[in-house]
Image (cartoon, rainbow over all chains, first blue to last red; front, side, top):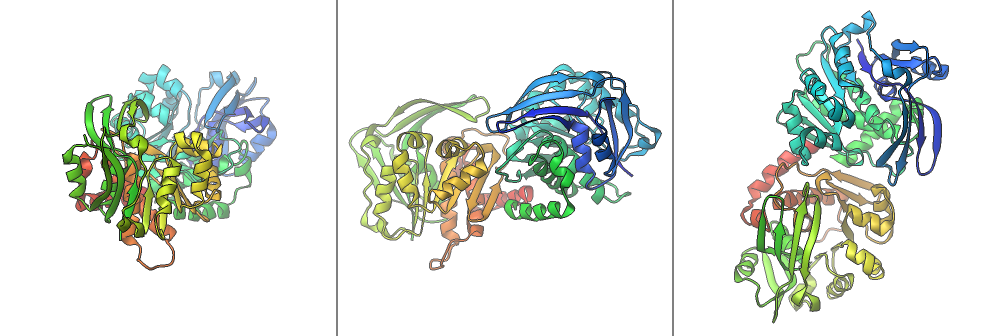
Length: 303
Length: 303
């Protein structure tokens, strides 16, 4: 049993007010898979070029991450460069080189098709759908998205939403998708589009989980020093689906709101560790003891 | 035993994207006192002109609010006019007529001087200090403030902060006062200025309570329809101090962080009711049963 995670794999160049680093392991699939792998085995789906550093591949393979679905093709790996301004809440993309990612057609290895849990990371809705269509009988499917797809592929995104259990998006994306300035209304409207559950991520203000007649407001973990916010949303989603997979009985009927609530808290914790360092550096040395310690602190400050 | 509350009393003209209303009972002392009076008797301190409608006075007097400290002087009552734009999170002040408020010197009736709990609503720090100096031995003092005083009376505000137990301010005020974009850092820095406790109010994103080695992130109560956000911060502060006064033993040594945590939740609830209608209209018909019902819902969604 595994969590299937599809998304981008990138080499990032990140600038913050204090620091600047290049050739970092990045991309939604990388962050989400590393976070999920703390809790459950991952079937990784992505694409890189022949320039992809062997140490990145080795690191991913050293965790509970199956790389059979990582395509390596002639050419250069997707590259992203961005800068954080002011209080790290504002990000400017400086450059994007899609490279091999441009022709990404995620075809799943046969062994992946039975993955019960699926995280459709932030890629084009048609690709997300293409992945989902190859899975035999998914038990819980989470999709992430972004403003680009809401603006350019709304029809395809709306089609996809009918086939997923949960959509995760941020505040501005929720407003863009629904036209509602009120986030509580936005959550309700998105549920009406298909997903049984919706999460609106608010960064430093935490996240909102919407279900049927159920709602959970999860605070952010308080951090004074954020070194690099890149991948916060992806490690949140990865931590969430990995933890969820780890706590639900294989054959039980339905996933409960209480299970999702706990999963949101673990997602929040993984994201909080992730932003303490560049790339996946903090997650690289993170232990289960660290996670449990922070979980207990989190319960103290939030309930 | 009473909570002393000082602040402005105003006649408001409020415009929202959907509605517009005039001659509303407003001002920080009005909102805070009505909210506090659900839990504890209030000693009210404010000033109005001879034009102040008798029904507003009668309404305040009909609650647990002592109006001995409400000065009525020849002239017009303070008038404020504002408009809410977009998602109600942005407010523009259209006009301010200080009128009799301009020469407000809050002199306390002798019976007020033994008030153990004090809420220094949002007025000039020198006036807040003047009120505090007239109180014999205050047990817990909360001050509210705003960007105007941080910019124009920083020295006086910093003096005041050495004499209060708690400061309540919003996100942008916390950033302005400390120069820190990170709210966790801002809370820590404000505590270093004097107040043992600090609350940073984030509107729809809830509030943060800081104490010594203690922190509480309180979510906002989820509301789809906000009719008029005016007075949200004041009803929060009033509900908080009224509830706090009601639960602490008269002679106990110290106010605990857990007591403050509960008080923050009740402040949040009072604010959530307040914004459901213009002026104090929702609070006018609010019952203890309504509050307790919402309290139980709130516990479900936040912990």
